[in-house]
Image 1 (tube, rainbow over the protein chains, first blue to last red):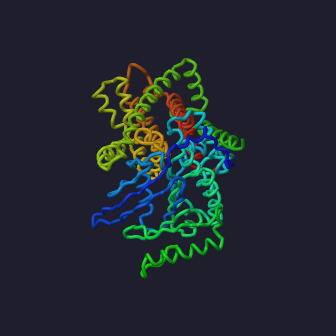
Image 2: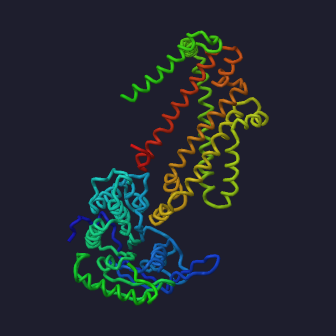
Length: 274
Length: 255
């Protein structure tokens, strides 16, 4: 079902499945006193159209891992393959939605959504405008096309950031705690919207969060990470039907199991993550 | 409308005080001419074309020098922001030369270029460039790093990143730097024109100086008024649109 009306002419679909592979990635941060290992031998395989969540407390290297996948930070060991091609820098095939919206104040809403599209080859200017309009509709903000960034609420800003990241049709959408700065009501609304958009666009998504409930609500698979150095400790498959309600009892049961597991991995000295 | 009225009333009151002061007879009219005398001078100078000609000469020097200064200052500021070494070298040089009152360039410019337009241009460029360098560099260094990261993931690298992301993101700083550069350039040009007679064109500063030499106070005050007026118009025409742009887009300032 294509409820949002994305024709094949509007969004150029890649032909081969966009599989993302993280292959033995390790990362150290060098400080004048000592080398701190941030990531230790991370391995991930993400299938086309899958929604993956990485959960862990702050300091577990989850944002660093996302940066490495995005190509913003090089890995010290191992590599990332995007569609079988090694990642050697940032690029429009792996777009990032950050915790802050990172929208550009000198552009209006439409200009922000157009920013990535203008740098996407193989489109005419008319197609770019159409795609930008469609994505503003997708996030329900077509009325705010000519608004300026400071005029939007926090939730609206993140919707525009989502539209901006989706518009150039990346292989993978990387989300770095995109809902952490929002209030609970807006956040739960966006969980619903994101699931709907993910279903209609069939986009591969990797989301990083410290919120176990958020991960269980959104992910097909959830990976638990523990800090110093960051390691993947456990994988959970979330078998619940979609769209999921974050307040459902089935979800709560899974969240409880994951929280317990996370607590075990963190050891007795540290309190569990939120 | 109300604001306009208040403004008109304020300046009318100033004129009245001035008129009353001259009418009181306490000061010699040679030293304090009445507003009417000044207005008469301005009207005559306007009609015989000398005032417009002087304004044109001055504005041409100012605008050409200013835009050269900005054209040098913007890229130099961006380059300065890219590395700590540039900051310690170009940045320190810019900071030092910015604290030098730009009228101090006049003697050097005279010895290097003689009594030529080139000397005037040099003084104006030196007045402009360092403020722009410092502001642009500070602006580029203070933009949220997340802008550059977001831009890079969307395929904006190199020249595109500098012109389409970093420069616009630094705009609040850049505009205030350009405004300061304009003020410095304007002051240094007036000083230079008062100091130096250049035969290829008589600017406002020179007309002001002749007013002093002829002890014609109506001319001195009249030209001063024109200089103030040009400053105000330049602020409105050159900078107000930019400041409105910043206020609207960044949501800064009170509405």
